Image (cartoon, rainbow over all chains, first blue to last red; front, side, top):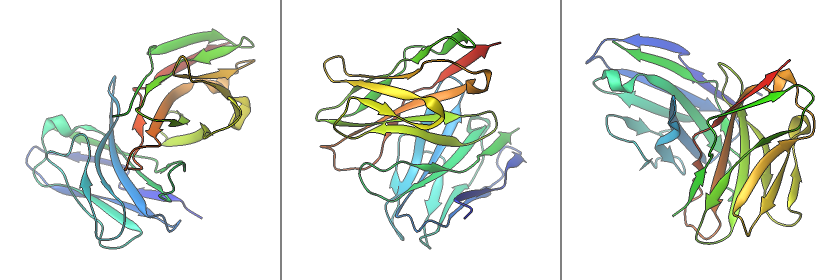
Length: 113
Length: 115
């Protein structure tokens, strides 16, 4: 049981390049989330999904797009990367029950030069 | 609206001493409260949660947390700290009366346990 798997683990981009981060979960969870973690800022929610085919904006959605075509996968896209998007990105999933915990992936370290 | 505050960026404690990591919250209704731990270069891991009932919640690795409704706090505690407890700790809250099941996280507290 792998839980939540993120790929890639590390990536370096040049300003203006695009990329997609992949998150996969094998727990049949309804909810999936993308967070970014920056020093002194804690975890900030980028986008989330409450089920297959649905997405919603979080706290800091600008510059990112997401898709949830399959229940187990949640993709985060950067169409034109900016240095301000240098961060550690975490995907998480949960069952959707109101008191249930989140399960996190191990993170993607992204540097935009 | 829901929010959570972790007033200390860093907590230093000697190994063997008790530790406390503070968390206060704000919700319009009643809260669900969570603590997560993040070890270096890892994702967050669930430690414990408060749903209802007993105000003292026990979790993984010997940690516990005390829910105090009058002070709107949910401080994380451990009677005897270990060097291996050194990590980043996050408190999270979800308002039971809210329509969304999205938790709000604090900024995190770095716990450093000195040998």
